[in-house]
Length: 361
Image 1: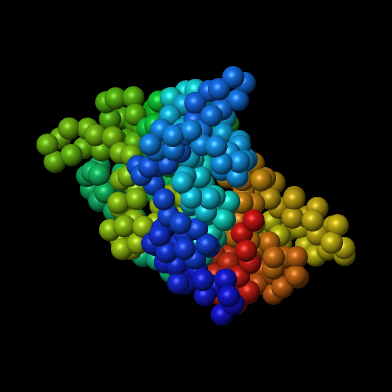
Image 2: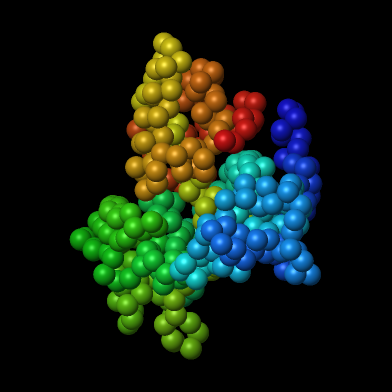
């Protein structure tokens, strides 16, 4: 077991332990810190008692944070190695958080590390989803299961109410009736997603098309609704998805784990298509091409996919040429037909279990 893997095994899910593991202190903006006030063309900084900060090193640290001028109610960590560096309210009234680079990196790494655990629970999740899709009534469990199945097959984000209200952007749980067209067994989703990106996603499934139509037929503008025990129609949210996953696995998996898994699996197919390389320059170009392919599938940018959705060990194994012994037998069939992992998913798990764990960027 390499040193990075040992560190990740030790960390677990305790944020205080995570911070300590990378030389940081876990802090909260509910505790005393520094604040700032406008002073001429610049800023003056004050401690929790309201005393003006004159220490040049402290002022230099605060300036290096490059806190946006528009931020109000700024709180700055009293510790240089605080996992949370500062918070503030932006011009749109939203609270913003800036974390220490080491914190961002280790949190990203632990997210990738949990993919193996996610893979171990995936068959049980799929089995329960299939069971709940067979429920006679269009109740809470059936509709949540439907959203999870669609999430797996389309990689559409789960969505949340705050993004819908603030930006007018949508995900699966916040889609409206107008965002889907049903033509026989074909589902066509069209909506504005995160950061204003327009999404057009099609799916062929007679069974799922029938269920989505049943949801759309429920009174109200929201697409994914269910009937409760009193016969009232209710909406679902991202919290329902996470609770459903928790009840099955006992772990804190989220919709984002599905996207990370899907992104890494998608990369395997793209790397097989890209083939081998004859120089590092060609290698880099092919990695860019693969990331572009994954970005297209997930509706993200290349940079976001590399940082959050393609496991760094997959990229490293391509650079080292070891990936091909895992992916030569992949075919064009990407469907999820059963609860068990498919060929590409098993290949990804083999890579994660047998290759040296690579650090996240």
